[in-house]
Length: 276
Image 1: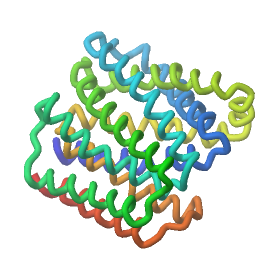
Image 2: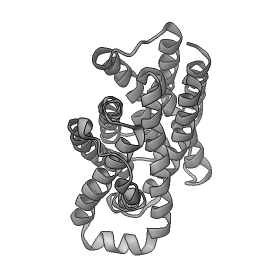
Image 3: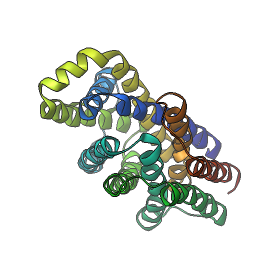
C-alpha cells in the first residue's frame, strides 16, 4: 500500500512540474492557467456520468474550491514576479511541514522519526534556496502564500477523498469544480487576452490539462491509501523536476544554492520512501 502510494506521488510530482512550466512559459499566466484547468474539466467530464456522486464529500469539495482559487492567484503572482527556479522550490517546499502538522492534528495521521527526518530534509532544501539565492521580497511573499494554500488544500482534499465513496469519484468532481469554476473565472477575468492565448496555446494547454489529471488525480488516490505527512512531502520531488525544467527548457540561471537545495530535497524524498 505504501509502495503504491509512494509511486503515485513520484509520478504526480514529475507531472506537476511540467504543468507549472507550461503556465510559467505562457505569455499571460492567468490565461494559461484557465486554459489548463478548463482542458482538465473537459477531458474528465465523461466520467461524471459513470462514477458515484460524492455526497458525503461536498463540504470538502467546496472548501477545496475556495482554497484552490486563492492558491492559483498566489501561484500566478509568484510566477509573474520571479523565475520558476526561484519561487517554485519555495512554494512547494514550505507546504509539507504545514500539511504534516495539520494532518496530525486534524486527520490523526502518524509521523514516525524517519518520516519527520525526511520532511526536515525537504524543508532544509527549501531553506537553502531561500537563504542563499532568495527571490525578491514580493515574489517570496507570493511563494510563501502559495505554499500555505498548498498545505491547506492538501489536508482538505485528503479528508474529502476519504469521505467520498471512491477516489475516482472525488477526483472527477474536484476537477469539474476547479476547471469549470476557477477556469471560467480566470477566462472572464482576462477577457480578450484569454481568447488570444487560447488560440496560440491550446495544444500545450490541452497536454498540460491532461497532465493535471495525472498529477492531482494520482495525489488524491495516494492520500486515500497512505498517511498525508509522508506523501505530501514526497510529492515535493516536483521541485527536482521543476529545477531541471527551469535549467534545461526555460534556460533560467540556476545557481549552486538552488542545486544544493534540490539535492537535500532528493535526500529527503529517498528517506520518505525507504524509512517507516
